[in-house]
Image (cartoon, rainbow, N blue to C red):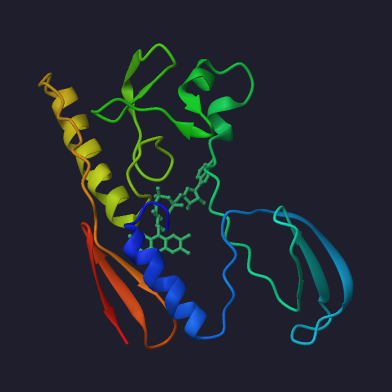
Length: 179
Ligand SMILES: Cc1cc2nc3c(=O)[nH]c(=O)nc-3n(C[C@H](O)[C@H](O)[C@H](O)COP(=O)(O)OP(=O)(O)OC[C@H]3O[C@@H](n4cnc5c(N)ncnc54)[C@H](O)[C@@H]3O)c2cc1C
């Protein structure tokens, strides 16, 4: 949400508030303890979550949505020279999407597309596809000894679901809500 215009998060927060959801921002869950039997998902246990803001939340069910972790272990395993191409778990690339090391030295024959790349663009299937197309084009150019093309990042449209019949369609800095 923080990467979208504030109007979007304000809208979602207002919508959730109107539907009885309490939103706690700017704090992390620090610990979870089993405290009893869950009312909804037996034999699961009810948990008590403690946040950095000092809140204690008892929950019968919990969805963990803290984001995904890229699987770059194959680059960092053992003595691989590719270890220096990983930054915070993401593969570092140049504008042509060639893998680069920490000195920005490019591996001419290794291209990376998709969520694994360390670029600032939103991690989306549409982005992965656009990047994969550029990688194909650059492999062709590389074989033909032509100059490589740079990837041009752009904002992509996104749909944010707010339940079965509500949602937001975000494009550039605008959004449309359907209620
Ligand atoms: C809940 C959710 C909802 C989403 N909704 C949307 C949406 O509405 N629109 C949208 O555009 N995007 C959406 N995305 C994002 C989209 O799914 C990703 O951006 C996209 O799948 C990235 O493609 P990818 O090929 O880079 O990675 P992935 O699709 O994750 O594919 C990576 C593949 O590599 C395999 N793999 C991992 N490690 C290894 C290894 N060592 N060796 C071989 N294979 C390996 C994995 O098994 C997997 O099959 C959503 C993501 C999530 C989690």
